[in-house]
Amino acid sequence: MITRVAVVPYPPLLVPALTVRADPETARVRGACLRAVSSLTDSAAEWVAVGVDQSGPAELGPDTAGTFEGFGVDFPVTLGGGGTPDPALPLPALIAGWLREQADARAVTTRLLAPDTPPNECQRLGAALAPESVGLLVLADGTNRSDERSPYPPDDRAKPVDERIRTALAEVDTAGLLALEPELCAELGVQGRAALQVLPGVVAGTGGTWRGELLYSATPFGVTYHVATWTRTD
Image 1 (cartoon, one colour):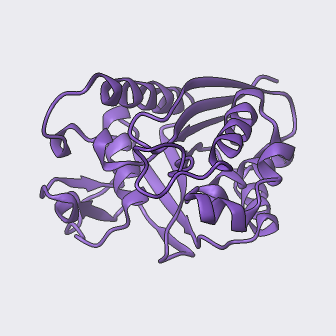
Image 2 (cartoon, helix red, strand yellow):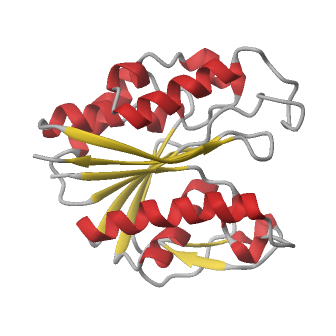
């Protein structure tokens, strides 16, 4: 069964080949993500990643490959095997592939959910994944309307939502994650809301006691990024 989860954001800036200059804040969020996924490899050589994309629902197997060509650099990644890189591979899958390579995991199967997937469907997917002997990688950004650096006009509702996500990840508060409202999250740019709501199903499906550790939570470039790990302790 799943006994460890890593939650990470998925901005292209995580990949050094896509950045034009070194930045301390980028290094901090990247380092936190690498620590989180290294813990996944400690528990399982194969992963399942869950992200959100307009192309969902979809499942991408380990033989899938892609490239960051659409983000300015023809930098290929793979989910585990060979194959011809797909320049249209969705960003969550690209980041999952890059993180897999950094952590030396054998393979990552990527499940992409539609942005409007209802919370109960997300929870059911988590329950279905729970018995699998894999590490679970959840790809989800926070809000993108928190301050003047955000790509969209600031919204006073953004910071409370980010705080709710931050607290839920730190405390393994599955009820808090399920309470995230799809429409509100869509308005505030929380594109990974559906992926986060898979977690309550995993916890319910595995039972036992879970411990959360928040490795990073900040809004460095107008978008909030949270990095956390959850570990089943008994």
